[in-house]
Length: 150
Picture 1 (cartoon, rainbow, N blue to C red):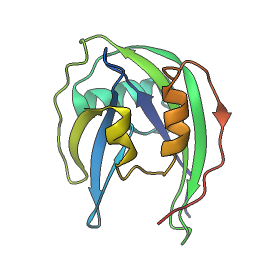
Picture 2 (picture 1 turned 90 degrees about the vertical axis):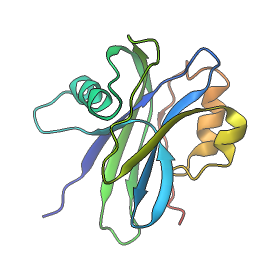
Picture 3 (picture 1 turned 135 degrees about the vertical axis):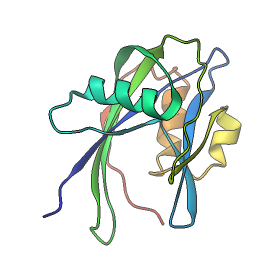
Picture 4 (picture 1 turned 90 degrees about the horizontal axis):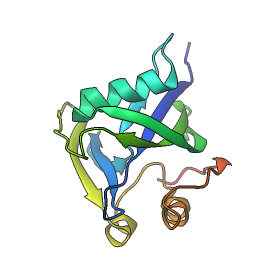
């Protein structure tokens, strides 16, 4: 039986208003996404986000500022179904992080809008993110519909 995976992601900006992203490499494909990960059974979204940021980047979550948006991703072959929830977060250690690479997680970096436009970002909601970025992700947008692009 296949399950829907719930993934929580952190929207983190530095003082230059650059966005923190992590690089994943799977099946020979390299792409960027918001730091975060899967919610485990019995774990709250906040607990999952705090755990994922600590595991991946040694970041101490100060608080979740607010919910920003969510969407679902269903792979064309129906092999995966993911519900993604994104929050703007504040962190305690002054945006200092240390990557803990694994089989998938390969890099972490802050990006400005110009660089971001040229990234492979999954799912491909870059145009939507850029619109939110103009207001520092301050206005929640709710659920958005996402189509699959190869």
